[in-house]
Length: 208
Image (cartoon, rainbow, N blue to C red; front, side, top):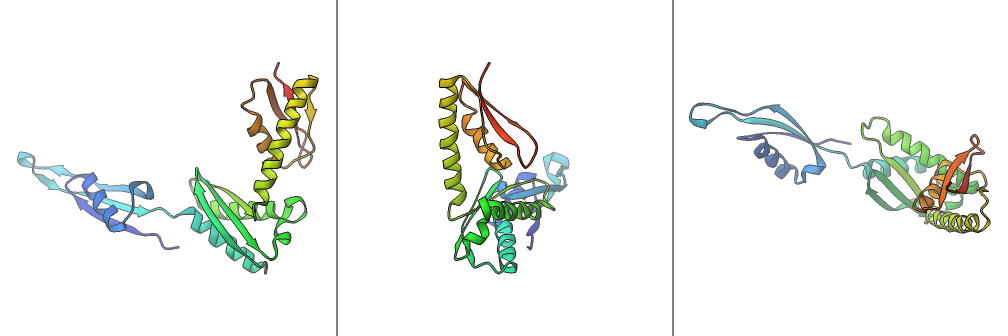
């Protein structure tokens, strides 16, 4: 992927950066700025040497991740397409749709988890600021998340009524994160994980 870089001079650093942004047609959040030469002033406050900056357009991670996914699916001979790509809070979310969705999801989502793991590794290989990748298939993960959230709330109510902790079935790290997140705001409930992978479980208990 070609990275766009421009060098610009200006009476001040801000002026030089603005000229670069105008040429690249983007905002300051979309670029990396390097000051190559500080401006200096001569007699009577006149600019003796203007500022010199190098401004580089940051790669859009969602485009890079989408390309990785498309290439992998092509090599796997999977008949599907990218339906939606979103990027916010350092998370790239990709939703797929097509004919071979069962193959992509696999047994209990294991193939989908493996694909997501590989894509994240490839996307972060040369990246300083790490991103998280979430790959979904026709909202399979979203429906699963909603189901787990509902289960967590039901079980937390049961713990409050019985005053006894509940140990959930073995879950993946992503599934456990959902349980912890949905219950972390409950003032009466605490959650923690126990056991070793792949049999690690979430415990829902009353706060002491």
